[in-house]
Every structure is written in structure tokens, then in C-alpha cells.
Image 1 (cartoon, rainbow, N blue to C red):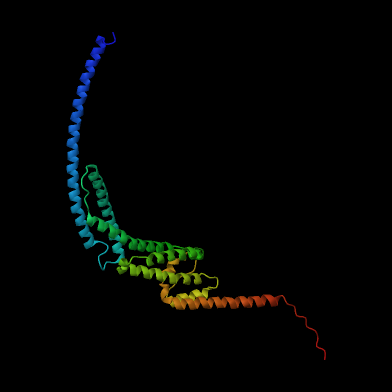
Image 2: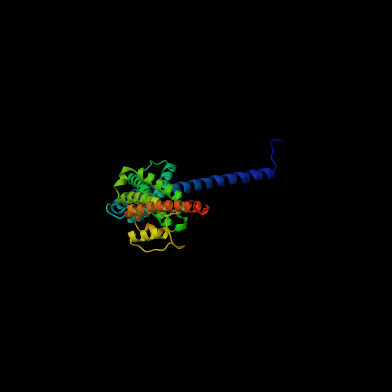
Length: 282
């Protein structure tokens, strides 16, 4: 009838019960292993957290003693130090993120790292100043390689970029204005904003070889205006020192061009005129 089982079905049920008991035993063993492993992970995490607290405190002391904010160091040295400490900070921040996630996983109280947070805040702040400092230096080095024949076509782009640098410098937090790099940066930007109009004037069609002779004389330099002539030559002259003399040269060149154009126009008009002379009758 429906309540009876065949011998084959009874054997299968017996095997199934046996396998099920084996599975329960295995699951228990796995749970024990997992519990031990979890305990090991938790113990290692707590040890790592403790080590990170010590490491970040030492990192903070090292940053204050030898970092980019040390008084009196040259800006370029400060840039190198900042880049070095940024890399070290990334390593500590990766550990901080990993360990914080571990604490959440094991329902542990979240550990604070005040020294790490303060150093991270200061690095981001300093990066505003030295990031701009690096951008400006890199841009100047790029511009030095511009052939003189291309300066006029790039003048608008150069002017816009310098205005952007000046705006970034103007918005710099007051805390950063104490640094030597800020003073140097501010002066470099201001000087270049003075130089750009001079370069524009020197690139005009009114500038003749004699005017370049005058430039050589007042700057006490020797150079040739040829295919190899690059902006670097003029930028290395510290043109700001000769601003008034250069303006006098370029203004004079413009006036001379107007006179020359006026004379050319008179010549052009009179060369087309025809004079007819008749005998004089008394």
C-alpha cells in the first residue's frame, strides 16, 4: 500500500540520514574553524590598529620636524619634501581605510587618528601653494621653448593662463602667505604679467633690426634674431629691470613706423601726379 517502502527506498533513506549527519558534523567543524580564523583576524586587526596609531603619531612628529612647512627652506626643497610626504600619507590613509572597514565588520569601536587627520589637512593646504608653484615653473619652462616667430599667435593664450595663475594666487589662504614660496610665486607672476606686454610690443612689425640693437645695448646681451631664436633668450634677460627703456624703444618704433607710412603715402600719391610746364608769357 501507499505507506510501505521498497527495500531500495529504505536503503536510500538510510544512506541519506548518514550523509546528513556527516554534513552536520562537517558544518560544525567549519564553524569552529571559521570562529578561530575570525578570532585570529580580529586579534591581528586590533594589533594593526594599535601599530597604526603609533605610526601616525610618529609620522606627525616627523612631518613637523622635516616636512615642507619647516621655516627657511627653499621653495624647491619644500616641493620635493611635500611630494615625499604625500606618498607616505597615501600609505597611512590606505591602512586607515582598511582598518576602519575591519572595525565595522567586527562591530568594534571606530579608532580615531587625530595626528593623521591633521597632517592630511595640512598636506592638502600646502598642496594648493606648492601645486601652483610647480604649475607656474613648469609653464615658464614650456614657454621658454616657444620660437620667437610663434609668440604673437600664442600671446592671448599666455595672457589668459597668467591671469588664471594670478587669480589662484590671490585666492590663496592667508596661512600660506607666510611662506617664502608664496612671495616668490607672487613676484614671478607679477613680473611675467609686466613682461607679456613688452613681448607683445617687441613682436610688432614696427620693430626693425636697429631696435633690436638698442635692446642688446640696454640689456648688455648678444643674440641673433633668426630661426633658432626662442623666447627663452628674452625671458632670461630679466626684462622687468629694463621696462621703461624697452617701452621707450617700442614707442619710438611705433612712431617711426607711422612717419615712414606717412612718407610712403605721400610718395605714392605724388608719383602718380603729372606736372605740365608751359612757357612763361609776359
